[in-house]
Length: 196
Image (cartoon, rainbow, N blue to C red; front, side, top):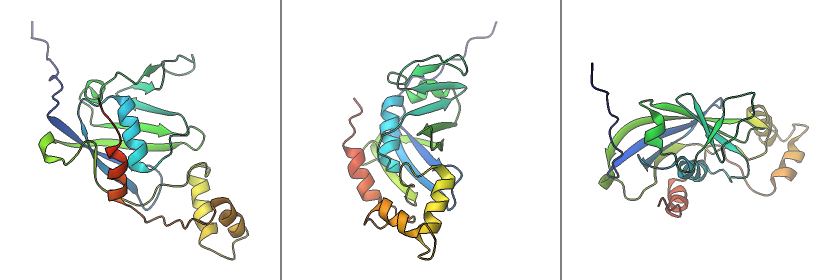
């Protein structure tokens, strides 16, 4: 009889470097963020929201190693049950996997792929959580998903487009630059997240 392999115990001195990428959009919208390996999924949700710049105005769900995790446990009968995320730690639910999904706003369907890139000692990071790098602005909320975002950009950038004035009126006086990425601003937001 072979001994049962034990998972390593979570170590508060280990940090996961995650790459968060918003699927189906070109150029790629991505972030690289450091989080403690024992972060709860509830806190990871808050980190993703702050790092991507979402407003947490919609439902979300994690899909990790064949299981779904969300705000509260539910069983709709037509899909696998959702496990409450609040006390689940990332390291315990990964079960050796390196890639998982996070979906935000079920209507617009913003699908994020998260990948564990490496494990580093906690002392290397100036703060936790911490945004290391990234590129491009996330789409405006309630834009209609990937297709709506494409139409929004086309109309915004073409003053002759029939919807140009409507887009400007809807979006307001804010200038939207899809290439914007402000790591300093993101880290100020992340500093407000208390992981304990």
